[in-house]
Length: 147
Image (cartoon, rainbow, N blue to C red; front, side, top):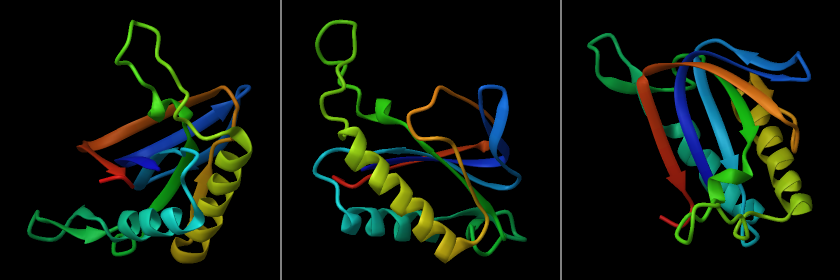
């Protein structure tokens, strides 16, 4: 499983010209699932993400977590995180999780984050989404369950 976490001052997702999710200060998280991922993998990734201390404290040090700053989450499924570009110029996506498993784990992650964080917005699994964000920093962290 891969999470690309971007600290944002605002972010939104639009599908068919309708906003499906919008947040202010928080994390935009792009989520990639592979076939070997499980709910246990997701739990580990969620704990790590929610515990990241990448917001500045009163002294300007990145010492505060999403919870500390009452931040929001915008969770977006993105199978292209498993693109394999080693051969040729056209990416292969054979390592990406099959849609049924990926959607099940995406929905699981959404629910677990709502249980543990509060304000969670989402994209729509499998849809053609337009994502807008203002990356604060910029600050981007990549979590990979295989690391």
